[in-house]
Amino acid sequence: MINSKPKTIDEYIAGFPVEIQEILEQVRQTIKRAAPNAEEKISYAIPTFTLNGNLVHFAAFKNHIGFYALPSGNEAFQEELSVYKSGKGSIQFPLNKPMPLDLITKIINLRVKQNLDKIKK
Picture 1: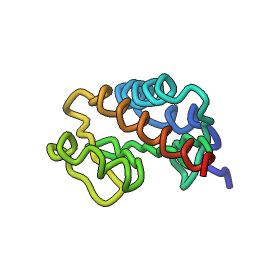
Picture 2 (picture 1 turned 180 degrees about the horizontal axis):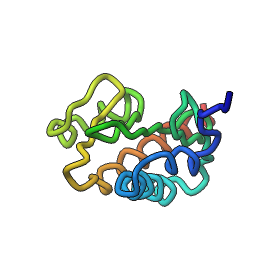
Picture 3 (picture 1 turned 135 degrees about the horizontal axis):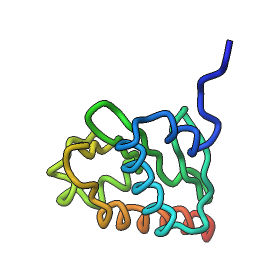
Picture 4 (picture 1 turned 45 degrees about the vertical axis):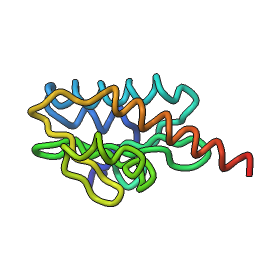
């Protein structure tokens, strides 16, 4: 039996239709710009960026991109996130609307600061 679980973010993205691949790549590049020192990996079978611990996860679903910035990423931007369906540590960005890349950048900037602050303590 072939193991269909992706081992890299490239493999994960390649498993989706082209229009979804483009959106996933937009999100990925936005994270890379905001956190150039973060490392990419697959964790929980989805794309993950780490920098002194987990920074953020994201994944594609039928109607949205799931974005997982842990509870702290959601709490800090409650007002801006209020237009999206969200849970304690998850946000759903609908596929039928432009990805909020500026908001994603702000969330990543916060998460980078939080993870780097852990080192200082």
